[in-house]
Image (tube, rainbow over all chains, first blue to last red; front, side):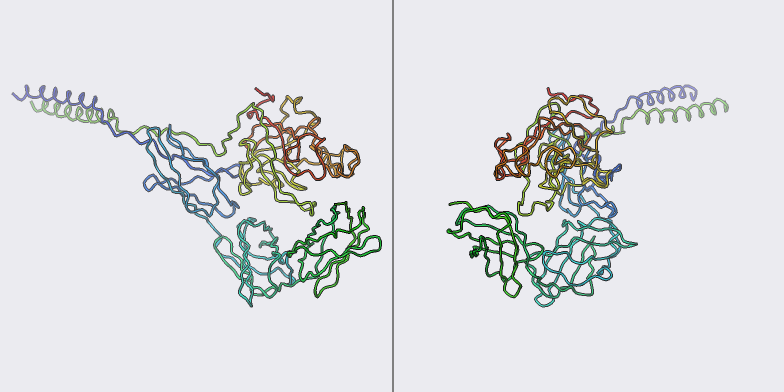
Length: 318
Length: 248
């Protein structure tokens, strides 16, 4: 009896084995709306891969400070047949709200959030460079600032100057054309040019870089200096206007201008002026002529020496 | 009897294991790898082999400070559009317009420390040929392209810096009639100069610089007070690896 049962059991087993071999398990179709690769390509001979989290739909990109990146330019791979909605553009590394929508061929979408993590220096200490003269005038550069910036990326530096009397703040935002150059084990910041309209007085200077802020202990003094201007050649009709621009200084207390030609002096009424520009009227009765570097200009500024210049002036009839 | 039972037990064991193996092997429960589509970083919209024309690409100027270098401007040949300054360290531009009146033209290269695109992924270069655009048919060898040079004023005019794409007529008596209005005119020289550029992504373009004056494209209409700098130029791009410039 046992011996008859055994072939029966074997037959059942073999049937089971074959049946299992034919078994197919249908899985639900995978949605084809994923970002499959994210890499930053605006680097020489290398890339930075973003870490893609398909659960919380995020991409994390770590940006080391020493790569001096201000923007990241991504190359993105998506599921077959899918595409990114909208253009993929370079992104400032400070951006926090970037999202990518992937649209599959079947119309389904996925939205990924980009997280940029800046891997920055541990601290920042800054000071004026040795032997710096702590006096400066509008439109001129601050003295060099030395610090442990550890990179050449001057465009990530922000500088703030606070007037110690009025507390008025002048901000030079990131993205300014500052330069950072190595000096021994430190870096020197240059190119911080004062605006024309900065008030005179004593200022505290604060530098922000890669998430750290450091204030320079010694203040700097901002003062006006003798106004000066360049006199390019000008051609104008009688009764018309001519303009001049300041040269490394600002116009303060501007009160009168005149020009002497053929031994006669003509007042040039001020039409308008700013710290950097002046517009003057040529009198209606100004003699027509070409005064090729024989026009003797004189500019009066309250409290300053008169500025005398010789220039080329051509005056034509109305 | 015992030996038969033992043998049967062994067979049963072996068959069970085999069955499990077969069944596990055959199940199609491994999802297929996710196929993908690449979105290139700097995909250009300009087709190859088609003549393109750009009119009045504008550079702000300040005639009262002619020697002060203005901010560099960037232009993408691949997209036929200006690129923002923020894109300087990317391969999203192919031409830089720098220096005097933004008139010196360079390429985008990430490996040259003197290039504005240094540290990024641009592979561009530039050269200038003393030929008219139409006669330039061969793509020059890669070794002939410069990653650091920029081309602007030609030695035939004032303040020339070697071979350039325009002639600066300071006194108005080189190309002009010597009159006041013909002084300080910049003459593009499409009849004898062609810029050749390797783009930031490695394609090739030849460029005919036509004018730097607004809305006027012939020398007879260029005067000292004609609004400038408005660059007008034509170009064609051929793909990486090409040996000929063709317009189809």
